Image (cartoon, rainbow, N blue to C red; front, side, top):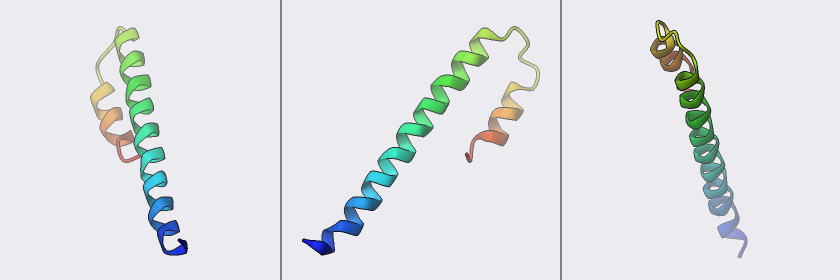
Length: 51
């Protein structure tokens, strides 16, 4: 059915974006847990969050 192709594409795109977002969150929190200085981590995290 060709009318279902854009819906499937948008769904897979949203799934890829959500998986990348969760991977970025895991990477960020592992890096934050390994760094001793937590002075400006929240500010940089809020600046990088829309990515």
